[in-house]
Image 1: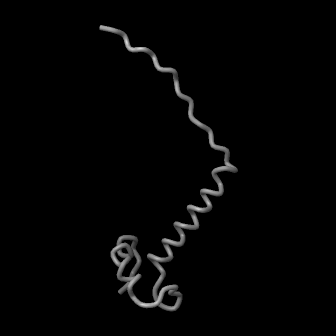
Image 2: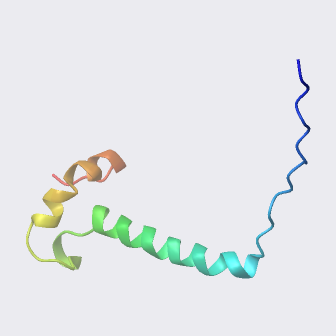
Image 3: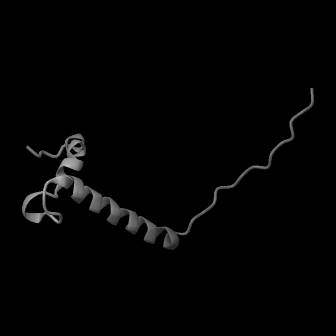
Length: 69
């Protein structure tokens, strides 16, 4: 049986913090916006009038523990 050739060890790629920070802030803003739309967007602070958004995210509200009834 032939022996397998040894593969060179791979080294992890380091990502500088100054390149990662803008993406982390962007992801945080997107996630907070989604959390607002799913959890808080009804009533006095609603950005979108009507109940279409509420009905669209209704099950997600219950999954995340937000009361809506």
